[in-house]
Image (cartoon, rainbow, N blue to C red; front, side, top):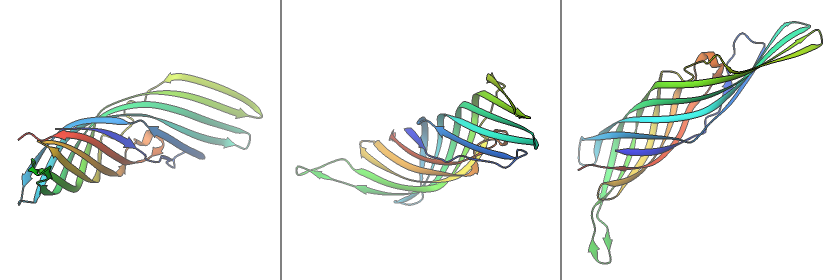
Length: 214
């Protein structure tokens, strides 16, 4: 069993679309997760580790789009989307492990284990919720008007349903089944849906604790 905190530092940029100019930015808060894992030995020091993890993430996305209809009329939309997502991940790791038997004050202590794992990871977005605040500015023949709509029509799902990436990490069994772990995950697909007009790849560091049932 594992529990972890997730630190996101992915950059967000705009995706070319029908607008004449666009930009996007966003930020994700520290998230958390809980999961279970199983280890299948191929040899004494090599094995396959599979996991089923549930994660929670939240953040905001700001997009700005401009539409120049003619030389005298321009419409721009600025949207701020606050979202939260619950998603599941299935990593499949090749894991290498080494056992140590430390000595403390002249006595042998319980074995500790160091693990190094690497492999692909699949992500599935189970639930996503979002609210949108929109400001529309119209510049028509030097007359500027502003329209603001809070809680505008929600996009619903902000993050894509499916994603894939690769992960590299370490874990260390400290004592009697209790372990600490850290890993880095990099996604290969844009995790925002096309309707947001934004593009970002998973870029995440995870740290946590776990327990190995004997």
